[in-house]
Length: 437
Image (cartoon, rainbow, N blue to C red; front, side, top):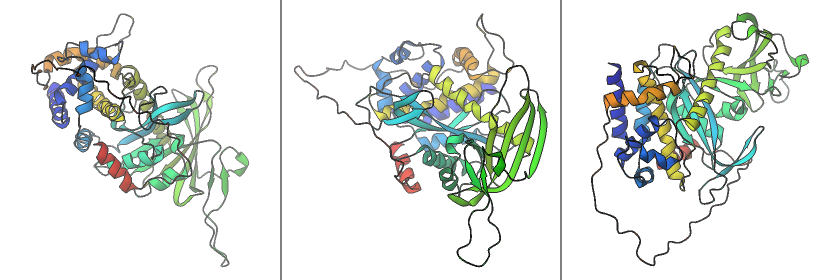
C-alpha cells in the first residue's frame, strides 16, 4: 500500500514533465541512487540512466515541466488536520565565473562577503513537530527585477489559495519588515516573522484631540532598549527540556512605521537558565499577524521548526547535487532546480517503506532523515521500477560541418539591484511565472 502511493506519485510526476520526460525522469532516479558523484555528467554512468551522457544536458534544455500541475500534485499531498505550517526563505547559488549566464546578481552574506550568482526562493511545508524534514512546494529563481520579499509573497499567495486550511507561514528576519507585511496584506495566511533586535515598532495612537491630522503612531517600542518597553500583555515562564527555563513575553497592538494598518503581536523569548554548561542564547524577537493566535508556549516553538528548511538547503546542495552543475543557460538551471522538490517528496513518500541500512560508522535512527532514506532508496527503486521508457536507437549525428566555427557566446553584465526601484506588481510576477513555465 505504501509503495503503491509512491508509484502513483512517480507516475503523476512523469506525466507532468512534458518534453524529454524519459531522460529527465531517469536523471532524477540517478540522483536518488548516487550517494556521491565527481561531476554532474557522471550521473550518466548510473545504471538507472539508460541514455548517453549528452542526454543529461539535452533533457534539461528541452524539458518543459508543467509547474502549475506539479504544484497541484504537491498540494494534494499536504494532509494535516492541524493548521499547515509553512517555512519560507531564500538561498544563493554562486556562479562568479559564469559570464555568459544571464541575470547574475550580487548577493551579500554575513561573514562571507559579497558573491555573484543567482538567488532562489523556497516555500516548504514542515510536516512534523520535530526532525529535519522540509517538503518544498515552490523553489524558484528570484529574477533581477524582483526582491526576496516580492517573490516570497507571490509564492505564499499561490500556495495558500489552494490549501484547504489557512496556513501559518514562518520567515526569518530578512522578511520581518514593513515591505513584506504590506505585500502579504491580502493573503489568506497567518505570519510568524523574526525581528532584528534593533527594530522599532509603534503602538496604537491615542485619542484624537480634534486638531490637525489624526496620529497614525503611538508609543515607540525599541526592541533593544528596555526603557521603551511598555507593560507586557502576557508573560509566561516554562521549563523546556532542550533549552532550560524560558521566559516568553507578549505585547499587543504594535505595527511598523510604514504599515500602520496591520497590527502585530510582538513576542520576546529569552532563555533565563540554560541547560548545560557554557550555553548562551540571545533573546529571540518574533512578530505574529493573523486571525487566531496559537498558545504562547507553542508559538515560539513553532518558529524553531522553520530551521528544517535550512537543513533542506544543505541536503539539496550536498546530497541532491543542486549546485553541482555549471549550466550555461538560466533556463537549464531553473528546470534543474524544479526537480529538487520532486526528489524530496519521493523520499518522503518512501520513508515508511525503507529498511534502515546504516553504514558501519552510522548509528541507527528511529525516524529516518532524508539522507538515510536516500541511502536505502535503490532497494525501493528496484522493487517499483520506473515509468520512463527505454531509449530508442537512432543514427549517428553528422556533427558540425567541416570548417564551421561557432560564434563566441555572448557575455552578460552582472545586474546590480537598486533599493530605490519599486517592486513589480502581481501582474508582472504572474507573467514571469507563466513565461518560465
